[in-house]
Image (tube, rainbow over all chains, first blue to last red; front, side, top):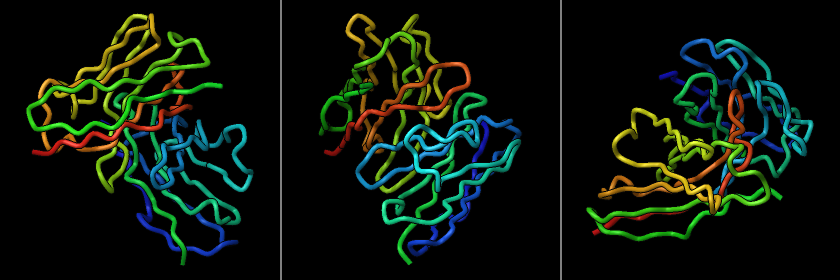
Amino acid sequence: DIQMTQSPSTLSASVGDRVTITCRASQSINRWLAWYQQKPGKAPKLLIQKASSLQKGVPSRFSGSGSGIEFTLTISSLQPDDFASYYCQQYDISPFTFGPGTKVDVK
Amino acid sequence: EVQLVQSGAEVKKPGEPLRISCKGFGYYFTSYWITWVRQMPGKGLEWMGKIDPSDSSTKYSPSFQGHVTISVDKSISTAYLQWSSLKASDTAMYYCARRYGGYDPLDSWGQGTLVTVSS
């Protein structure tokens, strides 16, 4: 199975901060990487697919980059609604494994 | 509007069987694979397996193979996740989600079904 790691596991930030989360795959997954946002008690929501393609309706402060084994999710200016957990997922090779998640909380 | 609607919370005893469901609305059900994802209390997301409703073909994560069964009834646009004998360690939230197939992510998710297994 492809192993996914994320860093940091927790990130404390303030409204307006620029936030970057890193996701690494144990082998190349080309650009077959998605980012999801999950709020407590809610289902995950797809933010970005194919490493950098923003889903319709997702604010432009979210962006993704990377290819191969290293990827990043950036929030350019953190908003109150963005405090949540973020997961990456590779969908290149089954099983389509998730990263362990990054919790963004209030500093 | 695309929706995946899951069955309600369950409280079961160890050793009991269980089947939970996920019904698709607002799209061609057989055009999208259904994936099941586990989230244990306070933990991350785990990909369990997927089913193609058009032909009922399945693929399981090695971590879940043999422990759960994924099935579908395309006549009622419903996918299922079932256990023959629950364990306390099966206590978790279970989500269904759809993907188009090929190289696509999970673009729509159910609301989740909480399964609690306790004696």
